[in-house]
Length: 249
Image (cartoon, rainbow, N blue to C red; front, side, top):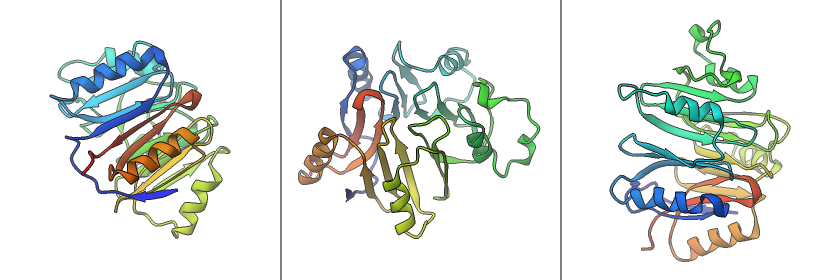
């Protein structure tokens, strides 16, 4: 499936989600707080959810977040650079970048290589990212990091629109779209889910997705029919999802 949309300001965004009952009230509170401080980034793995607001403040559910990420956030000082972007996956995988250009993450060694690409000074570093280090370090500027159905599966979209992926769990539909588009370096974001779900958004606002639930497909169709253009999508365990979209015209 595909649809086009424009990349408008975070103010005025609305949200749809299907999440475990245990975290729904917390997520509703997060979104309620966004009236005064708009949500800049939200991520879910289906068990936990994290939010970054435009001000740089953040919030997360009491359960479901990788322990290493929670520890890193609790240990940050007021003088530290605030978070800019967060992504969550199953098997404790995560990525979080900060406004000073540093990042922390946990994932396969191939992800380390993708994020360190071009940063020669990191090649002999002692950060130990793949073991969930909370020490931030410079990285290639990224637009999104997605974690797939197997531990080694990821897609990184860089700020310049280029991208890199790896892993046995790459969805065939996503690979097909990338191939059919001539492997253009014009992506804005890619997200993946634990059951092979995927979502891709290009810089000009065109969107593609696949392997999602009937409920999700129905939501996307409803949004398109009512001119509420989807902007961001995330998938998690148990068929969960989170969607931000523009208000109806």
